[in-house]
Structures are given as structure tokens and as C-alpha cells.
Image (cartoon, rainbow over all chains, first blue to last red; front, side):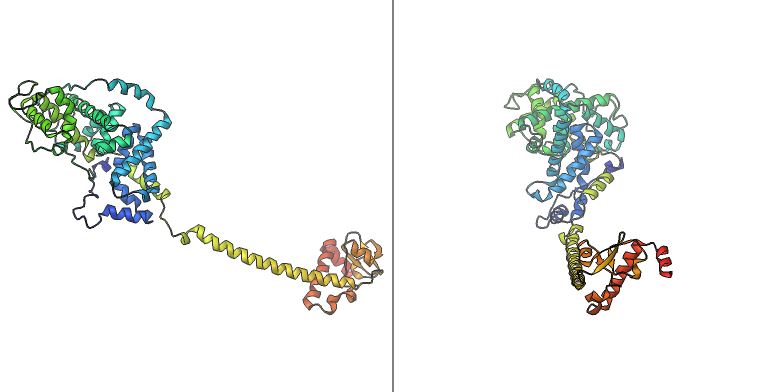
Length: 224
Length: 251
């Protein structure tokens, strides 16, 4: 998908703190009634919003619908946004809330809940200890690599996937992740640890299956 | 990724450790001579996520750093976990279905239309337009009502001049009463009664044969008389189809 290859500008970083960023300017203008600028304001975050919804719903159609609903809700409540928090975080929290409500409505949580309880017992022990190297980010240029990583993520149980996506993909901090999901900080840390280690093992298994076979690694060594 | 804290897990660590790559692999336990803490691999695995997030105290960080330098298994776990955090944190992992952007933009355009000033909105325009319509309609109604009333008053006064005992003729299918011999009777079947009875029964005086009794003939505007005649003609026409009326007129 061409859309995925667009590297977003960072509308938040503001070296000159005395001047509002483009994002801050857009927020102020939308809040004052220039509604036509709202899409310009949220466009840099649209894929993050979709990814957050997908992590919770695991269904592309529902995720897109919820992403749109979340954007509309953000638009309806834009005047309540305060500059103390990041706009992106606020947007993601609205999305997570919408997605959780949708899931509750559709009662899809019951089956996963059983697995969640089982998975939480005991510490997670890594399975693969091969020699390692860093996987270059260029690997992500290949669609099949991105798809394999997405499949590995989708294979995680809901509770791990949600925390991992919000923390490591959406870049919420631990506290924000806990608030968004309505769980404790300790739970976020535990689930995040397990999610990272499980994905690490899945990627190691993927290495065996040749996911990264065309990458310039030294013969006989794994990327970790 | 947009505006966030360190995406690269190596940057999340607060130490400036150059690399976890090492040569002196030795088992899972720390060397007690190099670290005051006796930290094991299981402790490392338990804390590795916090370590990557910079969420461990200085003593533990130091112990873990040392452990990574001497334990290839844990160094492997650290490197692999760093790969996970770095790769999944890359913007390119945020994929959306084809056409997602356009569909979103379309829906926002549909549901989040530009806000117009309250007084420029369609609803706001409807308010003065409706008010104007009400005023104009009210004036028209009032004017019409006053005119009709004046006309009704005039006709009523006219009817008062007709001698009440005067014998008049009415046709069964007409609403006008006449004096005998009025050409507007058109040879219809008639019955006779007094003017008072005719008025009581709702008949109106013929403006042709009873004209001399009608005040409109003397004082009313010309238009009124013409109007009365027109009204008479209308009534007559109503009672006689145009063809028949023409034949009667010819006779």
C-alpha cells in the first residue's frame, strides 16, 4: 500500500517554543470554527488511529469504521482538547475507547478472555538464544516482511497485542496506556514484557522460515 | 513516528552502553567480582522490558549492563527485543487499507462541514423570510377582510331599502330574487314570496331588476356596480350553461 510508505512529518516537535507549531495553529483554528481544517489536522495520525482500532478489534472493516467514528468524535469534542496533553495521544485514547465500546457491544471478548487468563500465569521464558545482529530498518521496505510482522502481532493474545500496540507502536507512555485500556500500570508492564519477548521469539522463528532471507546478514548468524 | 519519545530502544536506555556484543560468554550468572548484585538471567528477562524503557534504577541498570556483556544468551534476548521494539515502532508498520484516507476525508467532509456563521446558515435565513411572509400574509388578509366586510356592509344596507312586503320571484336553482318580468329569470320555474322571506332564506336581490333599491347604484363606486353585475352574471352562468344562456339572450 502506497499510503504506508509515506513518512510523516513531525507536527509536534517545536524547537522554537515561542511560536505555535503548525499543529497547534490548526487546533486553535478548528476550535474557533474553521472546521474545514480538521482533516488537515488529523491526517498525519490517520494510520495510527486505524492501527489502534485494528489492534483491539482484529477486523479491518470494524477497525476502519471505528477509526472514522473516533475522528468524528474528536471533531465533535475538539473544543475540549487542552494543550497539556499531546493531540496524538488524545486522538488515540478516543480511538481506543471507541474500539473497546464496539467490542463490548459485539461481545467478542469472551472467548479471548479465557486464553488471557491462561497466558498470564508464570513468567515468560525466551526460547531462542541464537547469536544476533540488528535487523536493518530497510527490511521494512519489503511488503512481505511487513506482512509477516503484522501476522506475528496478530497472533498474540488480545491483552498483549493491545498493550504492545499502544506502547510500542502508538508510543503512548506506560501511564497513558494503562489509562486508555483501563488497567493498572503494573499490568501494562507485565503484558508489555511478555508481548515483546513473544514477538522476539516469533521473529526468531520467522528467521528460520526465511522472512529476512534476502537481507544482508552474515551467513550462519541470526539477527539476534 | 510522529512526535514521540525515543522509538529506538537503544535510545530509551539511559546509559551510553556502546554495544551488547561481546566475546566472553560464560553462563547465566553474573560475576560477583564485577557487580555487587548477584543477578541471574531470569531477573534479566523479567526486567528487560523496563530496561529498554529506562525504567530501572541505576544499580540494577549497571548490573544488567554488566550481565549483558558477559552473557550471550541474555545479550541475544536484549538484541532481539530491541529489534522488535524498533521494527514495530517504525512508521511503515502503520498500514491502512487502500483508499482509507480518501474514505475518511469524504466522511469527515460529509459530517464535519465547515461551520458557517449562525446568520449565514440556511436556518438563519429561513427565520426572517418566514417572518416577512407572515407579515405580508397578515397584511393581505387584513386588507382582504376589511374590503370584504365593507362590501358585505354595503350590500346589507342595500337590501334594507327593498320593501319587505314586496312580492318577488325566486327560481329553485338560483340564489337571486327578482321582480316579476325580470329578463334574468330566463323563463325558469319560479315561486313567489316576499322580499323579507327571500332575504331570510338567503336569496340576494337581483342587481338588474331591483337596482333602484340598491344603494350601490347611487353611492357605490362604479366598480362596485360592475362587480355586482359581474357577480350576477356569474351566478346566472352558474345556473345556465353558456350555450343555453346565449340562446336565452337571443330570445
